[in-house]
Length: 120
Picture 1 (cartoon, rainbow, N blue to C red):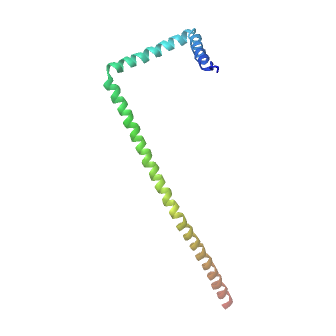
Picture 2 (picture 1 turned 90 degrees about the horizontal axis):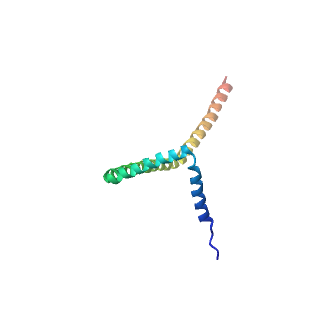
Picture 3 (picture 1 turned 120 degrees about the vertical axis):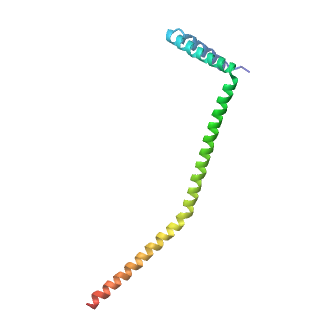
């Protein structure tokens, strides 16, 4: 069975593309600046691991608080939706009763008006 060379060719193509892009002076300088910045950051945190640990803990706490807030908001919204689901049939019934009452009142008013006009 033949082994696929796609992965290895892709890797070598990426290396070749990177090497060709480094022929440009601005690209080389940018890569060097970013690499130096990255290595100085790594060096700084290897010398001060407690700072890295506290930064990571702060970020973790931040995301934990954000997750808790989102969870609370979601449960509040769910609660309000459930309340709305319960209220909808009640409101529908109230509207229907109000409509029936007005319809009945309208008929009664018509009768009263007719009776008054007949008595004149």
